[in-house]
Image 1 (spheres, rainbow, N blue to C red):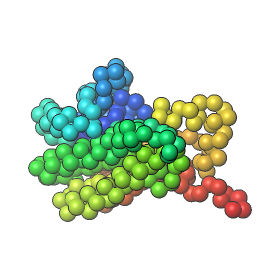
Image 2 (cartoon, rainbow, N blue to C red):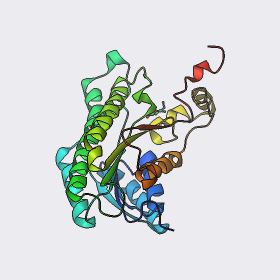
Image 3 (cartoon, helix red, strand yellow):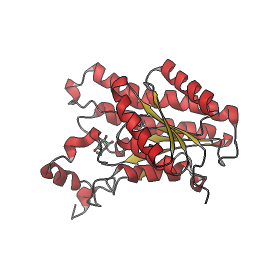
Length: 268
Ligand code: BGC
């Protein structure tokens, strides 16, 4: 049986750990040739581990260092991948981070750092991906000329005290995604977001690391379990595949119901 992403070249930013690594593994299982992007030299070993695991399971993967908030590095990554693999079919715009602080104590550096990676980084990568999709057009590997999945968050709609930079970045991702989806749908390019809820990864380790923290967190999740990176990876495979060919400009919430106002489970 033909796998869902057979021979498609997928760049996954921030794939040395967490949700990015989960997406890389799931997409490789479906036949994608996966570029495991990592941001800095210190993350190289982790990225290589993800690559090794994929290769050991019969998949194809390569690690690639690039800071997504650096315009030159992003251009070089896309040029390098296109040179090596011929094209890019899928971009998972995943790289993201948190620098939390009470609003009045938030420094401009903390604000800029989060916006630069989470929003500007997605812009820079999406721009290079779209240019390549337009150049190449539909190539027979997929009904689309290319697919972009922006990793957003439930916090594209849920306000989050103490995280103004992060919430603003994800709200920005939502309208950037919708705007470019509108712009390029006529060119057979599909652009969507996934909005994960609480997924067990290093970014939110302190929210589930003890029983007490976990019990607090579960109050926010109607399904009463913390998500796993596979939950997101499988959604990414579907969104990137032709099974989702008519899905464009939408956010898929994968959050165990976190956006369902769990505080209203009872009598309000
Ligand atoms: C954040 C996590 C948080 C989750 C649910 C994500 O976007 O990065 O830290 O646990 O949203 O609040």
